[in-house]
Length: 490
Image 1: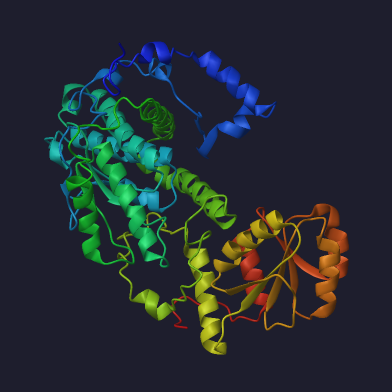
Image 2 (image 1 turned 180 degrees about the vertical axis):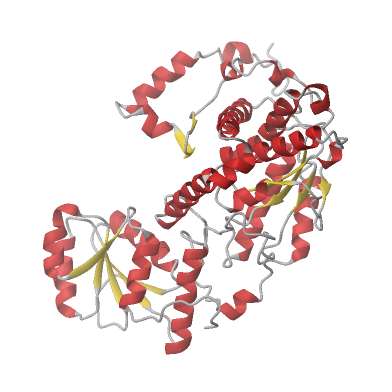
């Protein structure tokens, strides 16, 4: 007689036999149908770092015994197992290593870790050279936490591993520095003056990363939203999500363990380059650090401008109904400038798009209307919908008014964007361009029809390869908008 439903013994080993990595890879190659494994599946989030599409148990074999250590054990990769302190008004002690400044200057994760380690080692060496006593509580590193969830978890774990490795090189005296104390704060680099509640979502995932990674104290900064929500984020994560009930909750994750090891090794290589160049101070004076940060910052800015990196509500998926002016934006809660000096230029990736939207708001205040974009759809249902949706996001980032229509008629639109399939564009463009004096654009990149469409009167093309900042600024200029001036109220 069979067991009653719900009381049978699960035979998982028999029902789900082991599958080797070679078997997985064979299926992947079959599905790729000749496409490049590296291009399709390997992620390159920043220079020199490659993340595989999946990780299995064998990925931990190269890491060694560190994986098996408990929280609180040297080299403290897993933290100390204690609940992070809620520190909304935290003031860093003198001599704290401000890796958060590096983050806000556009550093990669590897640069943050390596440069912070180099500065920390120089401070430690100076103390030992002067035969001063070491106070473990003075060994404080401040890290800004961005929205790359698993990278930020691995970053703090790698920071502890790197510091422990470095101080061990100083022998018994170095070990007196103790495990590094990490204060984490939510980043400003990825925040925007627009869509404040998207910022609230960002700080929530950032705080979760910091807690899972085992930071010692945490500040959640309000950026455009009410300050009391910042404290509530930590309390919800602690009291309702129970993120602090388990020591090192990411421990044992093949991905997080492998990512921690990868970041630590890459950062150690860069740290050794800094040491070979003469140490942290010399690297600063020689321009080595400035050059590295400039390259990284420009690469990130280019990725946002071209929309290869998405900032929700900023360069994609904007709230097209929000028409905030500079007066309203200034009233929002924004943290003060973080740097007390000019060591590193602080930036926010959203600033170019904010300037575009504020320029549009100033123009609307002056002319008493927002520029209107008509998305004119026709033909292939799939293509016209996809391209109209793309343009809704693209031009919505500039704060324009957007209207969709299926048929052309006399309109008060300032720009008309044709949304159809490549094959249907030539007759569509000829019809519309003959009927209007308004600039006509095409959504897409129909290279084979470029000459024909331009001859018909099409003045521009918008597509995934378009640089949004350059294109939107160009059309603001064409529409006669006054230049945006920071500090001038529209």
